[in-house]
Length: 179
Ligand code: NI
Image (cartoon, rainbow, N blue to C red):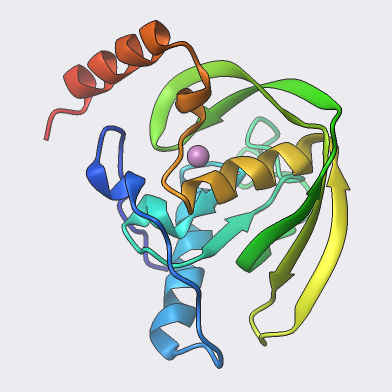
C-alpha cells in the first residue's frame, strides 16, 4: 500500500486541467489508481481525484457507500467497500432541478459549505479495461461525482461559495498548512 500526499488548497496544482487517459493503461497509471484508492480510504474520504495528488489525468475514485463514522474497533469500516474507478468521465446530461448538499473536500480540510448542483446527471466514462459506460445518477452519488470531476477541471467546491467566505477559507488554510 502506498499513500500519496493530498494537495491542500491553495496549491496551484489543484487548478490544473486534467488530460484524457490513453488505453491500455500503463503500469504507472494502474499504480496511480491503486494509490488513489489507498489514499482515499486512509484519509478517510468518499472520493479522490487524480488532480488532488498532483497527477493531471482524468481519473477519480469514489466509494459513496463506505462511511467513515461506522468503524469497527480496529478502525476498519463496517460493511464492504465498493470502490468505483472513473476514467475520462463526461456528463452528457444534467437535470434542471437543483439540490443543495453540504460538501467538504480532502484538499480543504475541515471546511464545509452548502453547494447547489443539478440533482441528477447522466455520465459517460471508461473503466480500467477501456470499456465505455453511460448511466444516470442522483442523490449523494450525483453530488460526489460532480464534486470529483470538478477537480479534473481545476475547480473546488469553495469556488461556489461567496468571495468573502472563500477568502476566509483560503486565509485559514494558508495559516494551518503553511509549507
Ligand atoms: Ni474534493
